[in-house]
Length: 403
Image (cartoon, rainbow, N blue to C red; front, top):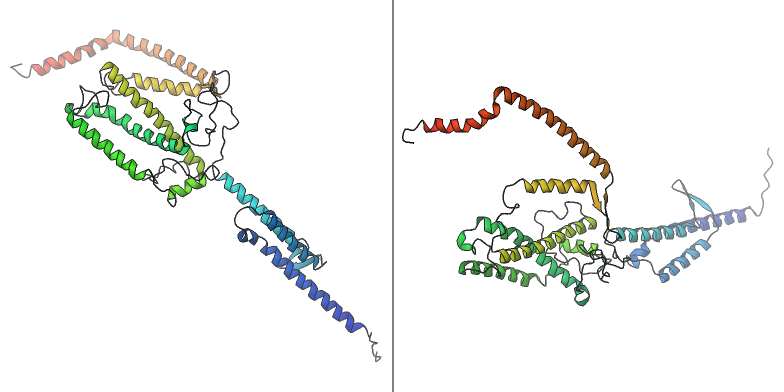
């Protein structure tokens, strides 16, 4: 027990060697971890766009240098095992995944061009070829351009002109019949709204000239308006980022009632509302043209003897029939041959239910009619009802001796 332990002369050298290995492992760990965490900064250094081939080459060289500094396999850091050799590669993979995800999100957040690019014929006119510039990218684009304006003129300019005319027509198609219903006679032409075909009197001419002058001044002031930097302008540039950098035609950055986001604040909802607007505007342009031609040909105002402007049962009956027809039947796509009318999903079942309801109501009506007829014969209800107004008039007359 009192014997002294023999010391190995090489022991100090072994301890120094272990310390050098530990120091080398610690340095390699720091270098690899710092490289793994700094790899995503490449996207900031080289811009938000996709990494170039040169950037990836530099990153791979730095990763190889770090991986070659040590053969240490694993090290515990903050309670987790970190594979040191693959640290940089893992960081690079994370960065590339982030780039791919960001690109996918950007694509999903904007309009993808070429909705109908694979169709040879127009959807609106299936017997004509689809114009090259009308591929369904823009709102209201159904390939209708029989005169080829979209190929002869600038597409954005044509869209701007269309939406301006559409909005003006939507105002006019309401104002035309409204003026014939409530305007004084001295503002009208024999009961018709003043127009180029109907003519003007001095007062209506001055009023019309003032209105068109105001519209002209507005168009002059806004024809070269800037959309960049406005709320809707920036949204539209993002929506159209895969199409062009012109934004959306008809954008005045004006929406006081906040209706533009009523169905959602995304590019799909905005495009859907623009499609609704241009569709209504096209209908209004056809409607106002029909108003003017009708009054010129007939000489009678459009509101005269029209079911749209006087109380009647025909209009609601037609509306109910239209809704019922659309619940049961549908027309096959116009770009598919042959064009047919077919049942909707569950349309045939709805039709059978409607028939059963009508038969049941008819049976109940027959029983109720028989019951009322029996009571009428017994008490003379119909005779008394028809005689009641005459008796009331006679009673009223008898109260005034000079009648």
